[in-house]
Image 1 (cartoon, rainbow, N blue to C red):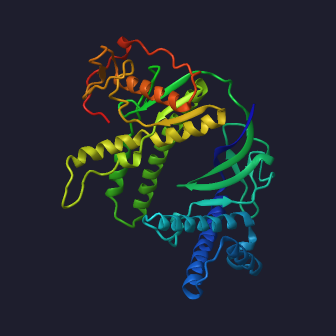
Image 2 (cartoon, rainbow, N blue to C red; image 1 turned 180 degrees about the vertical axis):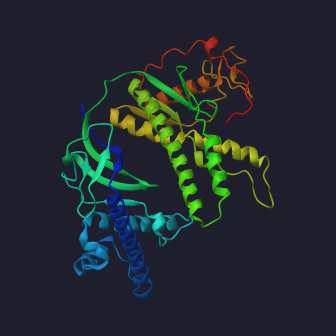
Image 3 (cartoon, rainbow, N blue to C red; image 1 turned 30 degrees about the vertical axis):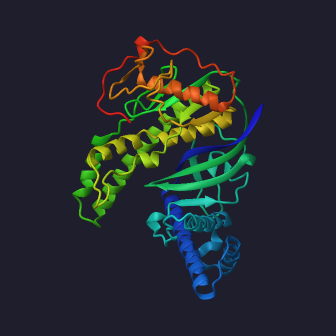
Length: 405
């Protein structure tokens, strides 16, 4: 069976020195267009009580291009409409937060340092050809990609993003792909800190260990510089490159793990964790100050470094792509209930789960993963899933640990 889905390919851009300068100039023109459009919306409401729509600003842009102002008539219409659409999305988010009673965050004027993206709304089949991106008014951009690109007719969106000194292209294609062969294997996944993921069949994935030494060295180099100096800007760029490199490594590691899980299993059950609430600060208020604030801050950093939300989103997207079933279950009591007799025990801080009712002795994360799998199979509403035998208890033995989430 063919499955139609969107595939995003990230590619590093290569330009000549003149091409980099020209692309920066176009980005500056788009940034001025964004600020002018925001000013028009504010004036229209304050003076005439008129709410400008996206299509009103499209017509305004047509007049600007006809007059040749800001050099907008010298390059394609797609990037300019993409900037106006970005502003419209900012206003939609503002009104959505107002209705929800949240902090609204009115759209702000942006300096050039915060404008790093060029969105092309109108794409054509000839925009990406022969390993190059051709957009009228932009320099010829060579791209370095690790996989063959689909035909140009399948191109649906194009985005150029500035990452420090480099540019990155994001190409979105609508492709048809053969679904993976059906399988009745099911798996439950327990997220953790000591182990990033533990599967119900006993497979474990090592946790992410940040390159703290390199990042701290770059941070200290920044702190030694005078604010506003040229050297500080250079060292801030170096720190940003270190953090970006770290993020790309971990994103790729999550991709490898999620691809393997989806490829081998027909049902993937994951615990539905609210990471935002789990990583809130423990400092409390002046009237009710919190306890162990520094310890909780360290735990929050470790939780966020494991990329649980990224893993869940990748598993959900890839499962839909491959025709698999993805289920999120309530994690309540999955670490306390026995996976064999369902008795509730308190494992404490031990790495090993011991059941006082049936005598089961197993790794506590594997026990939780098996409970998550059972809840996922129940939520899926099918009895054809093969959950497989649990790993041998003697191979699940662990050592006591000092922290547990």
